[in-house]
Length: 523
Image (tube, rainbow, N blue to C red; front, side, top):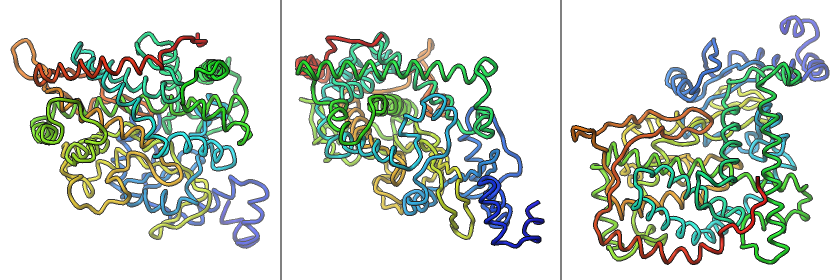
């Protein structure tokens, strides 16, 4: 067909003709015309796989760090190295800062209200301005007192009931995000209605955003099938209605507190102050407030859980050295602070290696989309391509991280030629870099420092007194991937450390009472 068009009416006329009758046909013609210049890739496509990032890494190993897939009508590029991701998503951000069309997550589930999935344009720029204003470095440092106070609660929880450490990590992460966002803390993560409703919402979002999982992403016409004949559609529309109710009720509560004059400084207050200037509707503001609430809990709690997993599996290799540094810099009379961390390069390296070793945003976050044709290393990347930079491929790339499954903090103390300022790619690239990266990294660093200061973390013992091994590849499915439940032993280093933790916990409770929810409209 394409050859017939080309031979009969000529190249330039063919392009004009195709652009008029069908943009999709034009894209298909471009792909056909440049077929010999496309990046390498497989001839057959897998679909419906539970953990696509594992397959993507196999493709990167076989075909290189730029792989081409034709997933339905959409060309897809899989980037498997930090350099390729940096070159395209950072250096050429003007071409690679949009988003592909997300029919399940963006349209059916979110009605186009989630800035995280919005294409590059006026709505996304307003959303991004709000997030930058609320969470970039200078502003994020104002949240450090909350992070430190909640961290003291976490340390005491680990003393009181160490077997429930996963629940404690979840409560810490949830309370920091909810307090920073809405000015109300979370005391019981299992019974807090806001946390439960948000968990439900995020679980649905992460499950529907797995590339290749739903046929409607490849064949958009399926979107218009009546819900009665499409259970997958009915489920997300029902969830959308529940999400709107949750976010709206939370903002109504914020407005009431603001009117009474008892609203602490928080991100939602910032949104209300900026709403009129940016011309955003009440629903847009409500969804914007839900952005850090939705994304920050799972990533922070999951990263800290990965740290505990590394302690069980690799602890003797790095824990003694970290504790020597902590004892030398901090001593045993108080908990480490943010100011201390700047003087502890090895502890900071452990935090960086934690984010590198098992990235929670295993697919590299939400995919990018190209807005113009491009050529990279002689390979043609069509306009409208979906660009996926899976961190499972990038962070486990042997050329950047030899023996990538080994936990080696020393990587971040060596001179390495790695693009970007962090030595890893956990927070993304370019204009779509994670706005909450400063808040998230601060939580990981502080809690790793305090946990290593106060506790010994070792393998659990079986009934015969032998160490229980853990599986470092047992991680959940979904858009984000966290460690599956695993056993471990968490014991205080000494009675002195316990006394310090108890004392600082008691001191933390008084300022935290300001953020205890008095009224709650969410049901």
